[in-house]
Structures are given as C-alpha cells and as structure tokens.
Amino acid sequence: MRGQPCVHMRQEIKELQKRTGVTILFVTHDQQEAMSMSDRIVVMNHGKIEQQGTPKDIYRNPAYSFVADFVGKTNLISVQAEAGEGKLVWPAGGIRFSLPPGTR
Image 1 (spheres, rainbow, N blue to C red):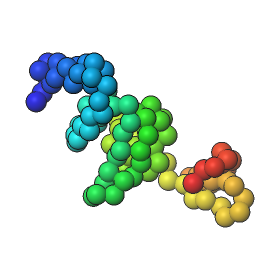
Image 2 (cartoon, rainbow, N blue to C red; image 1 turned 30 degrees about the vertical axis):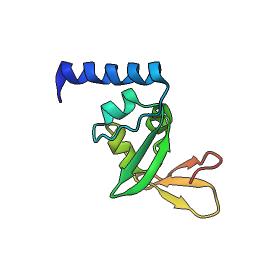
Image 3 (cartoon, rainbow, N blue to C red; image 1 turned 60 degrees about the vertical axis):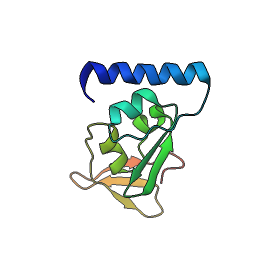
C-alpha cells in the first residue's frame, strides 16, 4: 500500500492498539512505518537481531552500519581504534577523538 491509504491504515492500527491495549506485532520492511508506528523496534538482518529499542534510541544511536542505513541516510567515516588508549583515529589527518564511556 502506498500514499494516503497507507497513512490512513497506520493511523487506524495505532488507534486500535491504544483503544484495546493489546500488543500488536507489526512486521514491515518500511522504515517509515516502523519508526512512526512502534513503541519498540527490532531491526533484523538475515534473521539475526541487529538492534532493539525505541524508535528514538535506534535513530539516534544505531549500533551498526546496517541499522543506520535502515533508519535513514548515513554519513559514515572510517576510523581506526587504538588499542588501550580509548581513542579513535581518523586516518585522513590523524585527528584523535576520545571515546565516550561504554562505547563498543
């Protein structure tokens, strides 16, 4: 479904869920549907869970490049980690960035 009928159907499903209070499992390949309709999202790649969380969490903090590509346009910069120093190095200029605590 595309266009206005699709938008209307999304609204109807969200309203039905709010009225009834039941859990609805909605499977889609459309990131706009997933981001606009869900309280929680599970992003899968070839049957493997890549990331799960709220739409806001996944959009702001994608765990992998696949997830970033799924939720929107990306501008990834290749970096190289320096072991033990907690730094990232951008090869095109030797610029060093400190890693935030808990970074994987």
